[in-house]
Length: 267
Image (cartoon, rainbow, N blue to C red; front, side, top):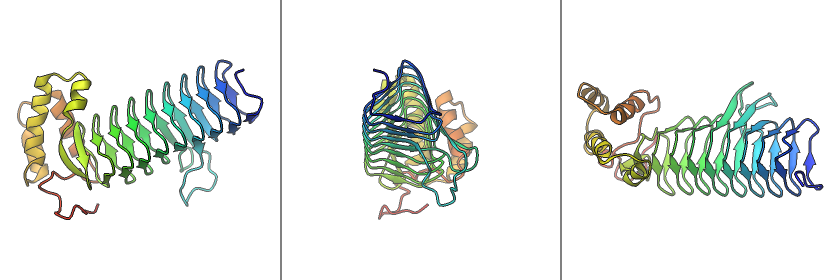
């Protein structure tokens, strides 16, 4: 049965005939649920939320509820979710906060139990947000990034493509693509395993390794070194790294030799 008789479904909702709504699900508002999406027991879907095809929303997840923002006063805001995402038990994704704004989640993402995605976040494709990870408002997570368990990400931070945040780490600075971060916004090295799994050749990885050594392995003026690297022959991956650094408004993570000894650097 596509909609369980115990589910409470708002008459404004648009549920595709091939979607499956489980027992005791609550759908409150003009929610759209696409074909093949499964919503399991006790999940709550709220507000102006658009959910694509073949997603799986597990027990107790809260999708599209009001943002946790004191300035929010009932404005019409949105959540848009793509296809084939998984939202595990008690994960939460909130819609935007400013009038007409949107939280966006792409395709093929995996949010583990109790993961939290706040208002106006932008999540790309094929990311993993592990159990207990907290993304504050306006955070951007690029494709294939991995945010490990119980990480804390400050509002407006960007996390680059194929970056990996180790468990219990925290950041109020942008996390460059292709790197491993831990502690307090400290870059420890290149995400070699992730790059290999993503199909990067040894030559591509070697070029990134050389660039990372120059940018993060010693105390330097990062702006000057970035400009110097750009004047040399660079692979597209290295150029993407340099672009990310130069576009940062919050500043990027420190290298291990640049971080304060106590590991408690501020933003």
